[in-house]
Length: 369
Figure 1 (tube, rainbow, N blue to C red):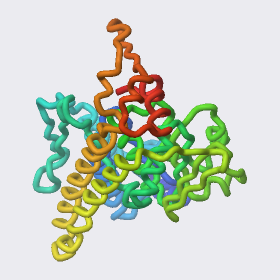
Figure 2 (cartoon, rainbow, N blue to C red):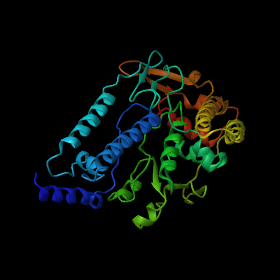
Figure 3 (cartoon, rainbow, N blue to C red):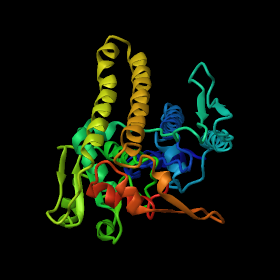
Figure 4 (spheres, helix red, strand yellow):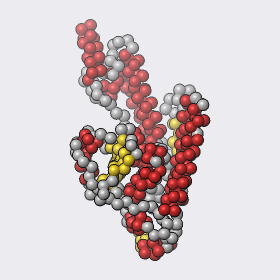
């Protein structure tokens, strides 16, 4: 290549800085290792940036040449040095995708993506099916952001098939809260659409809010203003930034049974107190140790919250305690069909409430235990 071609190529390399738009890395999997996948994607980004920085140090290549090649924006022949880095990155990705899957309750996978003296080994493991399902996001987050009273009101609305929209300026917070609220319904399984984050700039995204089905959707705080629409009358909006519920007069959410709900709230407060009590201890430690302790304490709080939901609420006397005594098996094969004897079940509750009257119908027609 002559000097003119080299200079022309270098100028085109540097123009990439102005042409490239925002790029997202997405890992698609049905396995629930969210935090580990996030760390792996951040590591991949650092590897790509490191390769780009190394190539740009001599001034011959743009610092965005690796990204341009990977995203298909590079239209010229790929230089040999760049191709070598691309091959190494693609080999790293292939090895990651080829990693085996752990057997729940029996095996775990230790994945060394870089030498152990550079980054710790990643661990993948799933609990036995008799234990709580694996949840890799902060279940206590909606309780912490909304407060326990408001969060329980939102939970009641979701259980009773209301259309619920969560909004916040913090995209990560609203996404995690949507997932957490649905996961807190265990042992019930939510069977309707769940969208952690509905983008404001997605064409006709607002049409999903008019769907004739219940849903739980997260949106940016600017969603309704950007779409220039009013909140539909049958939609409940939960504002995570102001801790407010926007509920139309046409919507009625029955109250949960008082004694059971009171016990649940008390246990949830005790669970959150464990997290608050650990804050002064973390402030006196190094950043790395504090982060490890917070993750550990957060996991303890999440387990306590799940235990409280199951034993203090779903298995309480006025909700679903001893519900098996009021069921009839209609069919075993090919799929079990169980019917609830609603009248005898409701008569067996110490305190009859409209909430449980509606929930018991939905639990055996919509939800799956």
